[in-house]
Length: 284
Length: 282
Image (cartoon, rainbow over all chains, first blue to last red; front, side):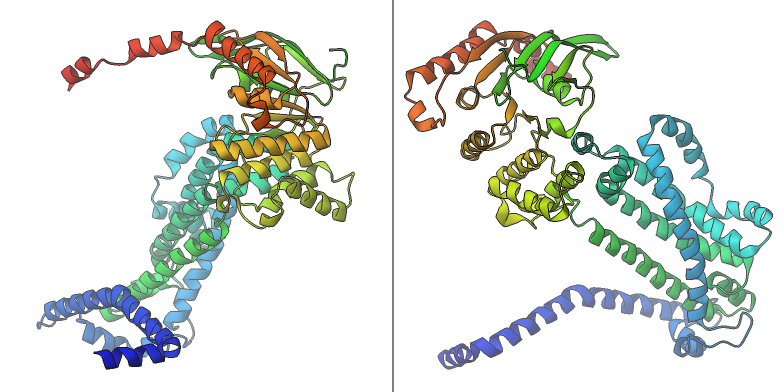
């Protein structure tokens, strides 16, 4: 005991730091990585057992992997037409989401500011928003197809109309909650409209705006899969529908996993940007 | 007063609410000379802050006028900068940026970029905050925030500096410290200052004149006390000074004898449910 402790103390400066770091790494692995791995293994095993019996309607995970191995190892093949790798399918969907969501961000924040600033605009627009926001995303698709006469802008419009409501509502709440003190500071300094907007209103409302943006991006990803099933073409939604028509259930399972992971990263990305931007906005 | 730098003439303020209207201020008249330090003292709720907001232009008076340096005041502006009670620094800006926002807005025409930078630093150093330029308000103490608020207000080179209970949210030691800073700065710059306070010692220590408001509703100026103590003032020597204590007593007598605040307390006691009643309800 005494021997080992003296050996430790001599090697402390160099080895102590290393082993402490390793210890930390091991602790964080045990705390953060181990539980989900165990749960995944258990769920996978249950799935495997349930679907292994002959006559099971759905494939077990082992079969999903063998069936979709080509898709997994080569996500970026392109055989023309709709026959593209999963990477391309997801990128096509992400592109639509990017267009629709960007439009929703610009229009949503502008309308939110208007509704938050003007009581008259709020009284006029709020009932309209409250009704329209309950319309399910796909219900907009036929009317937008009729209006645009083309599938791509229709899909983008569905994304737009799905994502815009939480952005409008959160922005307007954020703008309405700007402390009176900040308004008074702006008035004493005689900030003009644009200066007030950029220097006071946007930063003060940023935490609210970003929570709207985060809900919005989640909703757009939900809507795109459904919309693509109906409009066809390249995209993860239609890929799933196509796989169903071809009875390739394993492909569907793989696609669902990809959809989930991409949605997760979209959400985290907006959250991360929000944290960076609103770092200083917490009450001082 | 012969020199009328700031004058408040027959200011009335009535708020209209759903339940009717309430007259907060009635017939306020006050003339302030250039370089004078005035305190406005009164019980909470008497309308002190409303009066300050009217002078700042943040609230419109129902009738009457505020005239500063020969011009009527109708809107807020940097010539009447305000130090708000809860500092009101913008939390997403650093200490430097908070003052820069004010300086760049108000001195854009009169100063070059380099001059503005030097001016921001000078004002922050004057309040002893030169060391924390890149800190955000959340990272500094309450007293420091208030210092930055004062620097921001001074940097606008106001004709009148309006202080709305500037030390009210601070602990006693920090408050004393900041009071001394304000006295030093006022000696140095000769600002005209109007301060709202409910602290008797603070009023006597800092002011040239103390304006005492009666209790609302329809508060008006009850008494005006000239504080004729030589400057610079030192709170420790003054503590034993009979003149100082006499002024203190005057203000205390006004607040606690002539304008005792008992009615509202009694009302509240009537309204509050008695222990028996709340027990019975439960």
